[in-house]
Image (tube, rainbow, N blue to C red; front, side):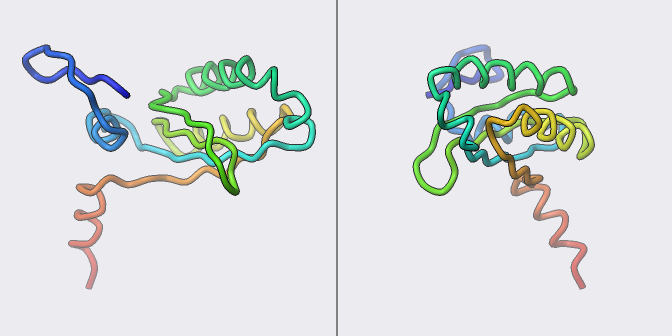
Length: 122
């Protein structure tokens, strides 16, 4: 569960969607991660590596909104804000270059951003 503060200052439970829409100051990106063979062999160290990756996000001007370990084709998913595509890509490259995970980063648009794009369609 996540907590957000309403305009009156009260802390309330929040969904991931509410967190993303509340943030809104920078573009949002979703990153999917797959362990490499090396990363899978050293899963005990993964929490430490995840913390280091969170620091890398901040180092390149980003803000981690949430990170989840997942079942299925991908092992982790994160949602973060970065000031631009270059900062998001640089962070993903920095994480991948460590050799423990491969990343797939996608720009995510909230409903309001999509509505604005849709208005411009012929």
